[in-house]
Amino acid sequence: MNEQTLKATAAALTANGKGLLAMDESNPTADKRFAALGIPQTPEMRRAYRDMIVTAPGLSESIGGAILYDETIRTKTFADVPFAEALGKVGIIPGIKVDAGARPLALHDGELVTEGLDGLRERLAEYSKMGARFAKWRAVITIDDAKNAPSRGCYEANAQALARYAALCQEAGIVPIVEPEVLMDGAHTLARCAEATERALHFVFDALRTQRVLLEGMILKPNMVVPGLKCPTQDSVDDVADATVRVFRRSVPAAVGGIAFLSGGQSAPDASARLNAMHVRHGDALPWPLAFSFARAIQDPAMKAWAGKKENVAAAQKALVERAHLNRLAREGKYTV
Ligand code: 13P
Image (cartoon, rainbow, N blue to C red; front, side):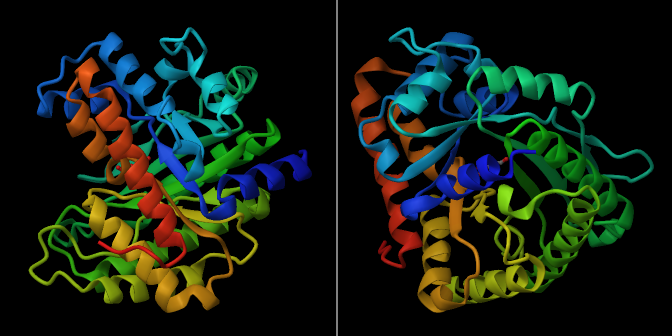
């Protein structure tokens, strides 16, 4: 394992107040988001959309790394440059989603386990040749108290898979983004999310240690600690920030290369305001870089502005870069609505 390369890449991803852009929606997810806006669901439209993103002027001022999907890393921009190379040229580190998606966990009604370990060593070698320097694997944890979920089986199976994936990445010189996502779906409280998130993190770091993963050479991509979308009590920005920092200070070793939150269905302004409050209220008590790795909370306004039309590309790029910039400000505690 090349420890120096891994540490340097992990540090570079969140350096200078920047964060990550997740633009690695699988084809079904990208198509679902296109369909909601009346955009045709074709490979050419996905390419056009992602071309709009990587050619957005000024994106690299706030974005240190971008996560691609398999289809995109094998495709070229309209300027005939492979997407990974186009990102590298503007100073954005290219990454790749390598999990094969979450599937039902056997004998665990309603719970999921992420698949994709088979053949992963070979796929990582191929992606590395294509320029990927980091990777992502997303595990999904569902809170459903009526079904006693999350179960121990779900926590353990997902933590195991994350740790084996992370070790394979580091063997290949690729920085793993370790993403255990406790979903916002449901009516659970902030306290319940805090409990499930803390538990998930303990299982994950236990498994990472067992699999000998170098903490300095990885990035954690967690959910923020938030109430369920249907919870009648929607806590204040400050309460979310306090609960989130408390859980991560308790659960994440200081050696970890960085934490970069997913947005998980929060509105773009909510995600930025909450990240901002963490820095305003706890900036001196964070042992790791605390950044963002948003998909929807950066892209949503841009995708709406684009709407699949060439004449809207400049407006969409402006919306994208603006949202990325606002999240950079949030990292400095300088975000205002
Ligand atoms: P969201 O920010 O839309 O949750 O996406 C982040 C991500 O990459 C999920 O895997």
